[in-house]
Image (cartoon, rainbow over all chains, first blue to last red; front, side, top):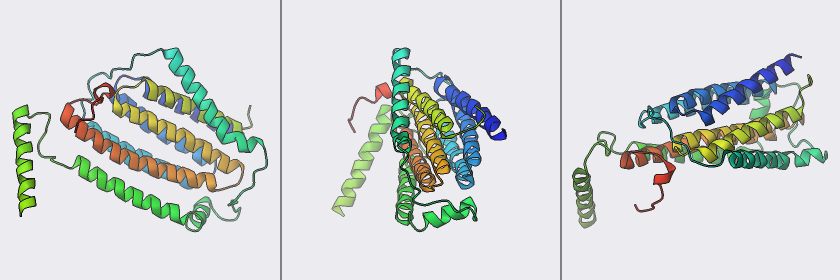
Length: 195
Length: 102
């Protein structure tokens, strides 16, 4: 009973929030609605008994990803209305629905055939976090390490891309100043090559 | 109706995935395109967690963790590239990104 009430309530809230994200013209509204939708999605994970996944969802998405987006939006002109791609709305909606139904069919095809067996069955006597730890650090240790390397690469890429020349704004300089800056850079490179 | 099964979660995942795809197709601003991508990844996470719960198998939750890690690194790299593009060109519309000149 309570599960059904919680499911329908959070399903309605999540769909409403994500609908706002894809239809609003204000980038700030989209950001706020996306953050709310992420928190509502973590409720499904708690209902499904995946407490660790729910906590990770709140921490990573609402804490890290949304903060990163908010930080990135300070660079962009977010007060201007967002222009939309002009297209046939019925074709877009139809194609999107068709693609989504196909994806769910692909995911649920092995389940419908009913010959599924649990590779890593959940143990009833320990909690979810403990189970996750046991499976993650035995069977999925190599993907876990690869994910760690991938996050390191992403961090270095973010620092290199966004941290370059933070003190001067290329958009506020005129073309002659940018040209001079590029010539200076080339001179520096030649000096490095010669020395 | 009152008994929540796996199909409820899969239908919810379908609806959210369709919303995300509509967003990907109709947005021109790259930042809002990224938002729609996050919706796609999250809808798949719901399907993974639901299947994991209803079959007593933790593999689905593991995949959801890796999807979250990939989403986080995608945001870091994508926003860095977007900031560089905005500094050079002053907008982040998809239509202006037709050149590949360095």
